[in-house]
Amino acid sequence: MKFGVVVFPGSNCDHDCFYALKTACHQDVRFIWHKDHNLGDVDAVILPGGFSYGDYLRTGAVARFSPVMDAVVDFANHGGIVVGICNGFQILCETGLLPGALMRNKDLRFVCKFCHLRVENFDTVFSNQCLQGKVLNIPVAHAEGLYYATDDVLAELNKQNGVLFRYCDKDGTLSDDSNPNGSLQNIAGIMNREGNVMGMMPHPDRCFEKLLTSSDGVSIFNSMVQNGGIN
Image 1 (tube, rainbow, N blue to C red):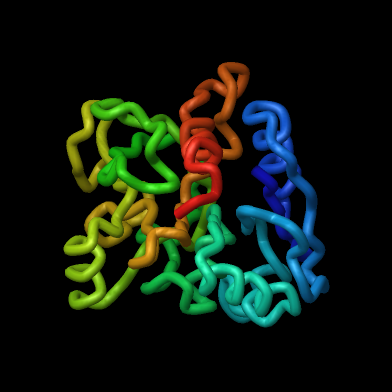
Image 2: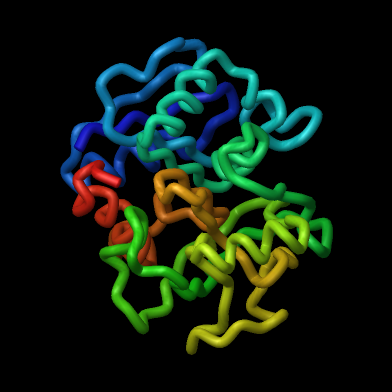
């Protein structure tokens, strides 16, 4: 597959994503500058974590108007695979490619630690290589990670199996203590109705090999590779 990693002013996980895809997954990957008006020949686009445009106004609110985002939206609307990680998730919600919003953490503090994730749907472009029954160990690093949506949006997400990951205990049990930011229903990652756009707050790009404490993140990247870019 050919991956494109978008670089915004303030991105700080772009090289992490590039390295994970190139080294751990052995894929063709290149950077896409935020001022570019086209994505080129890619099968999937990654919006990485960081602090795009300094997180001024609201996280992801300025990046939503970057020239490249018109191309990303068009790519997604035509079935292209798009992944937003942390700040990238926030940007996808700002564009309307994903429903809901990311708000300040419940304790109003930046949280940076490993969290356990329960995979809720294994039959997707983004999770087909995750082992059923295994709880993922993936780090978070954010101040605005509380996923919020109206009751009808949450009901629709659950109905269509659009919730991919939930924060949980090490045994897979959902609890308030295992929720690092206060996200509604312990939601850590979602996808759109069509199944080609995914956003998650935890960082698979920071745990794709044992040297990084956990290699669980590679299963998410490998799911896209195994899928071959065909939704």
